[in-house]
Figure 1 (cartoon, rainbow, N blue to C red):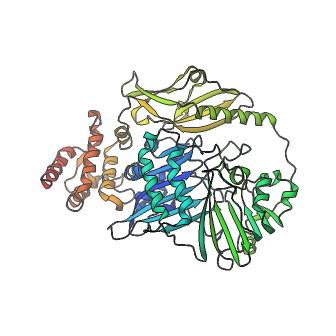
Figure 2 (cartoon, helix red, strand yellow; figure 1 turned 45 degrees about the vertical axis):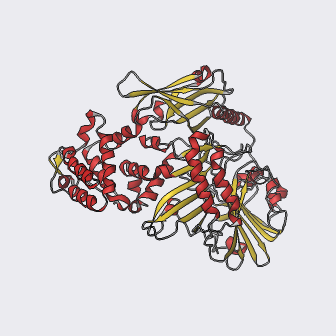
Figure 3 (spheres, rainbow, N blue to C red; figure 1 turned 180 degrees about the vertical axis):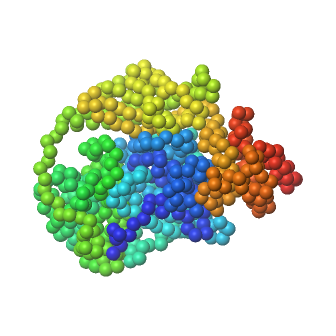
Length: 608
């Protein structure tokens, strides 16, 4: 059985480079995005020994070095207005601005595909690059919901494969959906075009029993709705459903076996729709996870419940398995406005997937329970109006071409952030709008409703390390007091300080931190987790406040100079950042700058 609910994997495990290879570049797509989850991705791609180590995911020094290594080679496309404000702030979020590209679906729906396309290269250059394609039903968030993913690998060759064309078109056109100007996305367009071309020339290694694979992309251009295969049996798994879409998906099926969905979704379907299936199920204690596709979905972020989208059809001996992002809704299958992806795997039923076995005790049987029709609760019209007001206000903000201007503040080394908008905009149904940079606590939020109406609203003054265009908004409705939070990645203009240097000085704020970061630099791709000094081995690294002549660091520096002299240029860059402000010299161990000059002179001589 191809789908085994007991065969589970972590989201980040899929990012692990293959043995003997290193990460080169990647493109990802998601509907919603959690910055904290994105912050950990570079660690898994850049530092093999750090993968799966919770302590390292929370260590800002490790995160800083991982982001510095690979962030410029990752681009994540996300639906505008669907970035979640992080719970815990950090200045490192400012380094994610250029990774995140907010997009809008070209035909007015939601940008809903979830995929990763990663390129890995051989350390020694002896092998062809390897592409890894991950198709998911989940977003780039910390959800603990029931999801599904498909992992494919292959190496680009000289021949183009027709089955990859639609997927290649999606990757190539991603930059065209950006809400930013073309000049801001020029380099991203080059990456998308390059990976799209290699993708179209990749012959995928198919899962056991699968004989063919097809990619179906919805929402890029006008056309007829995707037609499901004619079948003897059918199984639909989708957290959100509509009557019309279900009928479309079953149009060619003689005997629909089962529908698995969330209780609220099943309660909202017509009795006639439910009776199309032999059985209807929901998960035990299922709770819907926000997917943002329909207006009826919750405005609050939920982390549990069913989130997988799976469609299985049997015809004779053949099985058709479709997985991806598309819910069984009008928005996904009928309207043609949502950008969605489905991957169709075809093979013999006996070697791939059997609906009866999947629903049995060895499959999903122990996790699902028969659905019993429930009375629908009365519609809360006041709450419904409040939700609509919040969504309308968010749309107004998204379309207002907001920018953040950075100007020097009165305080030393502080900078004021000012949101600018077109004057005269109004927000019907709202009592308040507050905003703050996601690099600081929400306690710093300022009310900006009146300022936005006038065309300019101050967010307050912040240290250089906290300056960012990633701005969190909280909208409060006039009725019920319902609130909606989201983040926009706004253009940052004005006199912007050297934020990278300020972030480095903030994260590496003492001698111990400096030496730990230095060991990560010297270790390259093989850097150990938490390498360098700590409270227990401090004397081994220091003599008083200075650097010991026989310390492991000096030994490591000497070895690196002999084996990988190119890495020492990164140390020079680090020292420049940490010593840019004279008051920051205490971060470096006493005597280190003088000692480092010996290595710099040796490097200069080696280049002569």
